[in-house]
Image (tube, rainbow, N blue to C red; front, top):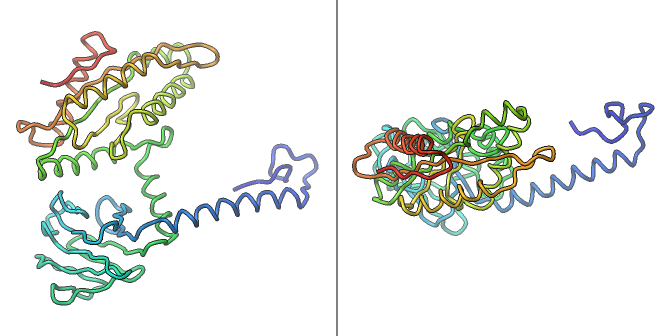
Length: 320
């Protein structure tokens, strides 16, 4: 709830009264926020939102004239479930309409319980429910305000509340998806696993508020300068972090890791007038033929991180 200055609920209230000017200021502020959100909504593409299935609430924006839905990690709308055919359906944008066609899938494609076939494509309308196997997706046309609300819901579920980066749950889902995509397309895929050196000492010496400051400052440093648009940066737990790097080999990932390491060492972490000594150790691994699962890649990267820590910390180790 937004309280106007000097209202009965405000700590600065003198006599429990407020004038119309305060109320007007709040209403103007709320109006500005609403207008900004409405403008942002107008810029959103049409999308399909997972209503039933995993990850629930995830949005697939329909940005191309032709897109495919299926279990294959290489398709545009990838739904990882055996009830979905590898190439299940096609989505086309024609003359302002979004048209859905089934591609001979095993379990069929339905719009509001009406079956779609290769010979009977159907045009999607606002709030149509699309059923494919065990999944149900909701269609929203371009410019819908509701699209933003789903985005906020998805963001809240998938982000660390303090650091505002992805959490472990989202990381593991993204790792599974990106691993399968890289395998299917035979593209490079790497991971950086890192943590802050002697972080417990920061908490023990300067207090947990100082520790929170370091985590926030560190996160902002990495996020603002060393991430590409498609990179997935997540908090794995405590002071441990992971970056997923699609279309990136081990050498490229190592270069990114080294830049992060040097930047953290040089950065001025100043809390209550005191500069804190902060460094980070990083492990790097890439997807190779010998790595058969996302969990194996994660363990391989974690072992490289362990080698960086036991080797003296404040360094990058690449898995071999």
